[in-house]
Length: 163
Image (cartoon, rainbow, N blue to C red):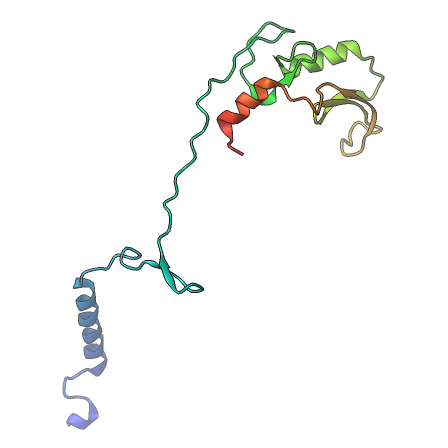
């Protein structure tokens, strides 16, 4: 009767119990720390090397300059979107510059003043007002000198970036 497997011994169940016991034995062993015992090995030189610890860079501790807009008299809080006044070199609100240019420049129908980058504005004409992807730049207005950087920009950049 023992040969036909009906003697009460279940091979599958016992095999499963054996695996459970092996897993318990593995889990009770002391876990090893990764990387703490193994120093880094340089394959080309054949030597062990220590990796330097990364230290975050210290940003500038200078105070961000606070100044008033010469056009509206309000303080310029957002220096990232401010432009330089060509006369005084002080920061100016972007909206104040746009307002001053729209007062100074006559616009025809379908034209608008748009910032095109690099301290320049453009009088832009849209042939189809619904299609803003197609336009023609009629005239470029240079507001900031590309070669001359305002001193207040350097102090702002030093507080946010080291490159």
